[in-house]
Length: 209
Length: 209
View (spheres, each protein chain N blue to C red):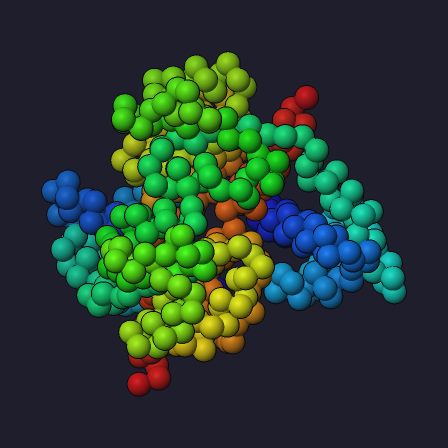
């Protein structure tokens, strides 16, 4: 499962690289090109592709258009997907404006916040009250969410989301959330990621002196 | 190396949990408490602690104040560390306002952007021109940076940062950057993380129908 998850993450990266290469007018790409761009090996690239039944020609490489079509198919990129963001603070608002999601076929349809000053029903997307969270998810059959609230309310927010029908979340709250099996949580603990780089940088310095 | 990296990440999470527990008035904590809060096992917790020579009492648990002191020591949390952010777009600005970094002993001392409209030397922290990046890092002996620029300028920005003395970065650009060995890069590809959750959620649905 972990292995497949990493392969899926890389497939999305291969796809981004293909789209950029296509824009530059390239017609075929070799596994070495993918490997170099992603900082992995060509063996890994071919392995990832073979897991999902994607094939190329060792001499001629992969045809950009053909592989892109296959990848879109495997990654189900033709279907748009609706996303909600809970928490309209700095992180929530930045994600709302983040072009990457739209480019990735993800449409942010609403934000939610318990601060009435942050709420705005007429904004696009609207910023709604937390009380509306359950009903909104349920009525609009939303399956994907982002948690960008403080750690002390994150579990409660997640519980409501799960009850209402959400199937996977990206979590920015610095806490390990509890969820049923088969529920997908990707933790994005920005503070701890940066703290750990800081730690390794400090360790590096100690070793040198 | 990978194993130690994961342990260090968890040590920072243990530390956050300790700080929160201390605020709630707790005086001792068991490895089970850590395990439950982080979604790991108590065996893993004790293993992580033993790697770094942190010890507790099986019956009485870990004393909060004592363990916090030891963790601060191991994680070098007494030293404040300066950070710069390159790219003052949505992500860069959100990170600037993000309290987590300050709480983690990280001080954001400047942002950099090539858009003159985004620049403001008098802001706190100042938003400077990209031309000032090399000199600022060099003069202020900055070792830690965040890359929040579009993918097409990320490698160029990183090269300047490395030349000027940066030792580790958190990278939000959706591209695998090239850097010397011993240089720390943590990739935070928000788009691909969310796309991969979307993929798994879709796969789940397919299986059910």
